Image 1: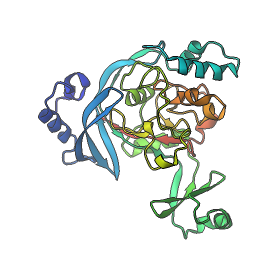
Image 2: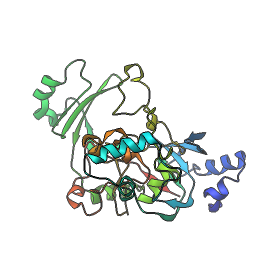
Image 3: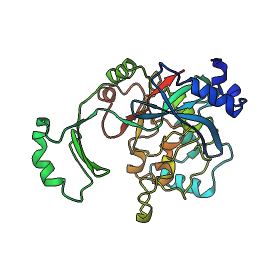
Length: 324
């Protein structure tokens, strides 16, 4: 295999047949990845001809390597009036008057990075939760609570972040939580032959190099169906707009409550803020600012060692990658 063909500059020059031969070679005998299908993903004006693979029951997608600019400093086109007024009015509640300065301080700095080709997990994984049999003796301390609160018609029930029970496609699933430190969690990922994205890699996977504030543009799109602002019961079974596959086929940065763990980076969580902006009364546009490609939560740098002593829970997730 000619490695340079796995990078965007050469990859995009390949014919369909050449590209499929190259993608097939990534799943040759002896690898852990099984080729499922070739697929083209389009989103927000970008597209990628790629392939979907299966590994341990989970889908992965090929993402070509690239050299590109990351981070955010200024608008590409500028906000529309509705978005600017929305954000400014929200910030005034906190005595913040300079919106542009606030946005710059909330984003990672401008930089250039060369990123390797990768096989990337398409959906998120929980951290710290393990499934247990409904008859397990480990559930004895929770029996009364389950009996009292998990009634017919109830979708889910959680006890103090240590046990949860929910219905999934007609099946009842029970899980227990076991604390795990950031260092132990990363070590386990590496032991199994994977890694997690760095902040640079995550921003590439999210925005594909887009230079706008959000990956769809500089203004907020109020027509999107969003997880925490959608009350349309007729669309309850349809995917949220940002949860649909992006230009690489990834479901990423779609829920500001959900944060993805990254490694080897100054900031170790990306794609959310645990709901701080939304719960803090910042409105819809700033509430979804954590979905912006280059967003950094100011409380989630590597200085937050207490948080890293238990990295799992209801708001942190992971996406494994295999660098090629």
